[in-house]
Length: 80
Image (cartoon, rainbow, N blue to C red; front, top):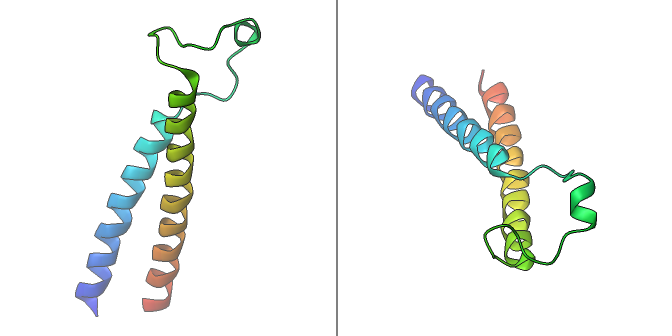
């Protein structure tokens, strides 16, 4: 059992670090007043739909990783 607890602890740390990285990759929700008068492209010429698609994937990944952290924490609690 101790080796299983160590493995879950390591997995929990790795998933938590990935979760922090995914959260930091997301753009802020408030773009300010400038976004109200902007056009449909970003500064680098990418369309907003591509950016929105990336944000949607990051949000889904954030939810999945958050759930994984919660489940791993509960499993660790049950094992101890």
